[in-house]
Image (cartoon, rainbow, N blue to C red; front, side):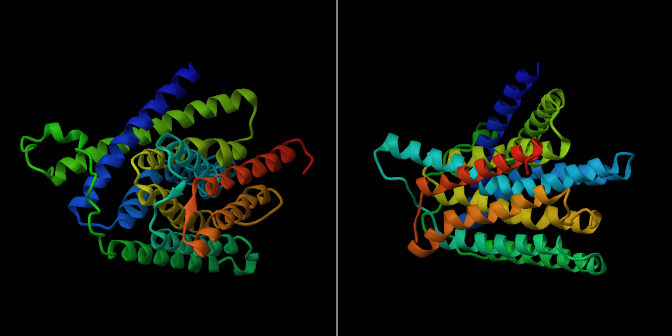
Length: 350
């Protein structure tokens, strides 16, 4: 039964991702937004909703009897999202690029706007660095976590404003595929569908993505309970695999269509969002738990590995001005390293 639910959830997320990428491109086109705004803001925020809901719900429920367990799950989910994006999502996208290059007989270089990706990475490094630094504050300085939360909100608002204010490149709307819900428009003979119909498709896509993610996580939780996986480990590693599926599917779809800036922006933009908004929730509602302690060290170690993965993948891009599919595969190495650390911890070795 759990296997059937997993397959059904995957298909639902995939359908939602296909509708979402198509709808959000049309929305960006109608609103005259640059690719960076479409991929790094609209798509990133939309597809980040499933993994954002887990810590919000978990921390919100922490007032109940199982306070510590629920809060640990919430903190683990917050830390797990950037880690998965910086490692596993990069691996999946890199594989998609290599498959595309093999099928089309080209190289594995991504045709991206380096400025868009550099902006995302700079904001991610600053925001997540501040959030992790706040976890090292001693108890007497704990009130400063509220200040850090305010700074993170300001950083994200400035980041969104910068992307929305960017100029749209000439020919950015070329290659737009017909809106999937276009057949519902009586004016479908006209070139551009109505904005409300585009919005309807995006909303339906989001509902499919969130619904599929919820079903997937529920099935994964059942399986984890059967094999005796610790809830904190589940929230840090297993659950984010499911909730990051929208970003992975979106990126693979856009890679297949040759829209590399949208593909990478969807991931790096989600990294910025996850380093700001969910961490603000933790800093404000679970400040005591957002601290590096012996029991939370394994979770916060994922942040160090996320930074290392980002540096390994993108520093060459910043120096050479190019990004390759093979370079993205480094994310898989860091993911495997962390799995090894977790395995040693579970075995009591580390």
